[in-house]
Image 1 (cartoon, rainbow, N blue to C red):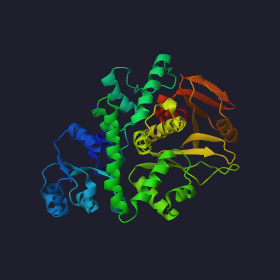
Image 2 (cartoon, rainbow, N blue to C red):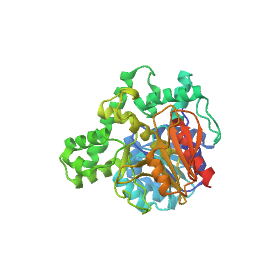
Image 3 (cartoon, rainbow, N blue to C red):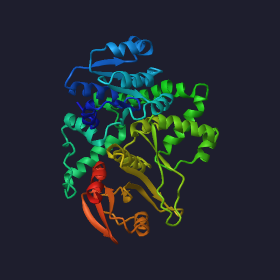
Image 4 (cartoon, rainbow, N blue to C red):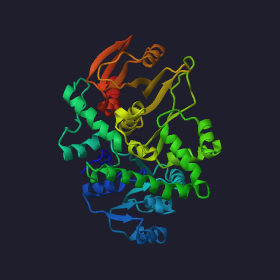
Length: 424
C-alpha cells in the first residue's frame, strides 16, 4: 500500500470544523486516500459514493432531514461533483450540524469550483491531490522490485548520496518518466508494457469522454483534440497562443476556454515568469506543464526510453516542477526566468522575498555554472543559494556571493525544505 503524504494532514483535520475537500484530476487516488483516512480515524464513519444513484438522491432531495438524523460523527462523500447543489449541502452541514465532520473528494467541475469558492469561504479546508511523488511511487516500486531503498524521510542538507545509489535512482527515474505516476499503475504487472499503455490510453479517453464533453458541450471536440495534441508535443515550453490558434484552427478566445478547462480539471498548470523590473525580462508569457508524463506520452504516442527522446531535458523539467509543487506549501511561489536574448533559469523558488534559482542539467559530472544561472546571479547578487540538479552526487561551488549546491535529480522534493532551513 502506498501511503500518501496528505493523509496525516487530513487525519489532523478531524478536529477542525471546516469541510475537508480533496480535489484533483481523475485517477490520482482520491477515493483510495479517503479510505485510508477513514481507516485512521478513531471513530467509525459513514461513506457515500455519489456515483451511486441511491446515495446521490439523498443529497439531491432530502439532505436537510438526513443531516439532522445522521448518527455518525464523520461522513465521507466520494465523487461530490455529481451533486449539483453540493455547495448547499456543505454549507448546511457547517451551519446546522457543527458536530458533524465531512470529508469529500471530487474531480473538478468548473461550475462547482466557482460555487465552492463563493459559498464556502472560511468553511472549507481544500487539498489538491496530484499523481504520486517520486518518493511515493518509489515506495511501491521498491517493495515490488526490491532494487532500491525508498527515499529517506529525514532531511539532511549535508548528506552525500553514494555514487551507486545515485546511479540506481537515475535508472529508477527512467521508469518513472516512461509511464508516469498515476497510482493505478501500481496494480499492473511491472513487466507488461502493453497493459500500462492501455491503462493510460483509457484515462485519456475517459477524460475526453466524460469531463471535456461535459464542459465544452456543443464546441468542436476535433478542435480540442488538435489543441491538446499540439500542447502535449510542446509540454514544458512557453505558451504561444498565436501558433496554437493557427495549428488548431481556433480563435484565441477558444484557446482561453480550453486552457481554463485543462487547468480547472488539474490536467495542466501554468508557470509564470519571474520579474523584478531589473532590466529587460520577459514578464507575460507563462510556461505550462501537464500533470503526468505518462499521460503526455499516451497523448503523443511516444513511449521511447529517455535516451532516445529529443525532449529528455523537458521531461526532467516536468519532473522537478511537480516535485516542487507537491512539496511546497502556501508560503512558496514558483517561477521561471528568461531574458529576451534567451538566457534562462528553469525555476525560481520564492519565499518571503528570498529567491533560490534551480537549474537542471543532464550530465553525470558536475557541470560549469550555466550562462543563464550566471546571468541571474549577476542580476540578483543578494541570492544566498542556487541549486543545480544533475545525474551525479552532491557537490558545492560558489558564484560571487552565492553558494551553489549540486545535487542528484531525485532530491528535488527536498528543495522547499532546503530553502526554508537556509532562509528561515
